[in-house]
Amino acid sequence: MIQFILLLSAAALAFYFFSNRRKAQAKAGVKIGFVVLILAAIWAILRPDDLTVLANWLGVDRGTDLMLYVLVVAFFFTTLSTWVRFREQELRYARLARAVALQNAVAPEVQPRK
Image: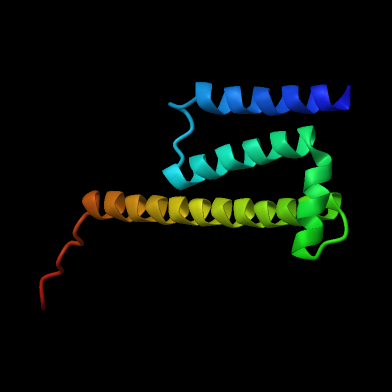
């Protein structure tokens, strides 16, 4: 039963991602990474013993530990990507504010010398 719910969730997530292509302005690498992550999730749901074998091959005791490590790395990537995107957006707003301020600037009046 839990496998069915997890597979349905993965399918719904993939459908949402691909049906909202206009709104999701992601780079091609991010889209490919998302597809790989969805496929890996489906594989791990359908064949959890394979995940344990892969984990043992990589030097990790359990497949669940391997999944946790992968999710931690994905979380760090997402956090860093979001921070960089917001930082770039803040810089664009600052440049726009400077341009508007310079465009609307009024020259100071020159005082005649006495």
